[in-house]
Length: 316
Length: 312
Image (cartoon, rainbow over all chains, first blue to last red; front, side, top):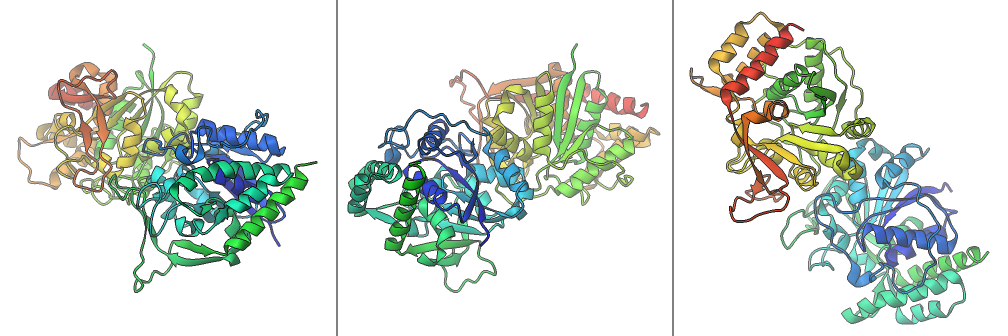
């Protein structure tokens, strides 16, 4: 099987870390060309620092670049209520020794894509600022992008507002560029990510493990779920993991192909991923594969296996 | 006097041509690092072809690059006053010049970063290229002296009752530019509607034997074909204001204002909203809004530039 070329664009963030780890554990299937950062869950400075800390802790060095410090035309809104002051509260990371390959995620991605023999799949799990600028500044990359498997949006209910999911809410203009780009979009929206949850008991299992990756994940998630406890959830969505998981195990998802537009207004609908749900409306090529459900137990099992695999690799 | 480094970003466009000519005639004061195109008055393909045709006709060349095909997030809406080709009905030769780049954003970036001195941007079409430049390469901001742009209006629009065409086409890009922290000189409709050429001046141009002046007369006269022509009718040369200000700031009246851009889908889409409350003071106004110009001096300088090019 050919390895899929991917670039992960993220704002770590607890669930971002889990998504990166899942990809790292599956490098027999993925050729990770790079990981880039964007402001969202926390400021660009903090999320980039978090990525470098994670790399240093794991002892890995996949190429990395920092990107946009703010949305294309709006002021930055942070997700600090969920992810804490550092953006990755819950675990004491070492001081980072890993240095970035570039401080311009857009030209970094452009170079990686243009110099890649095959097509590339983008996996943006934060606000879509970097990707929107990439597609606008370098429209010639579009034909070399296989698909965009993103975390963001929702068909029915939002989270940051009643109608909008956080990543899309932060930079609706960037999202509009991405969804209207003509590139196939696979959307892990809140419908599926809220099914991709982890239970308290599963987090406890992780925290008790000796492996340095599993244990770290346990402690990170233990912080992350505090917010969700307060919200009254029984399991805790690992949103960003879905976008990587779909590329590995599409068979554990349910989905529907839909035409999705982005609300770029300044109204109460700002950032809504508006899907045409009318059954009788047929589109020749709906722009989005909307993931709607997932086999939760398989999801957790695959994720835990990935952590264990990394426990062995990172222990060396 | 040191020459000012400029890059003109345009969508030629009849008045764009006049702005370019004014700059070309003043290369003792302006160091033109490049001219880039953007979709607006017509499609990118047409406006780029127009620029190359103009250069071929003139036998001159600055560096050139083509840019964005469409606004950041909206569908392109092309202008209606510049005709099917975007340059009236004057017959230009087929272009014999090649572009230096087909990516205006990286072209402008490279030019700015390679320049020892700061650079002034002169965008006279929709702000798509400039918005992308400032977003993709934020480090250029400190090397940009000024953005002297044509667009917007304080009181009344043209494409809608509230919005001027360039800003209406790509409000999101305009919002990036106005909020960038780079000083803006805005030639909005208040000043450009004063920056006019009258019918007798156009007739003189058309009757001239000069290669440049005759062409200018014919393309400007195209504006008059669109409406009922009267002897006292004058036509604004909008885009020339942004270059003229760099050459002769003293002929303009202006006011420092804080301006934001309406990015809604509503009635005010693309409006450049100025805070006109007299009692509200800002530390640093983002925009120097040009409000009036001495028409006679304006047209004399512009016409002199055109006739000067006849001899080159």
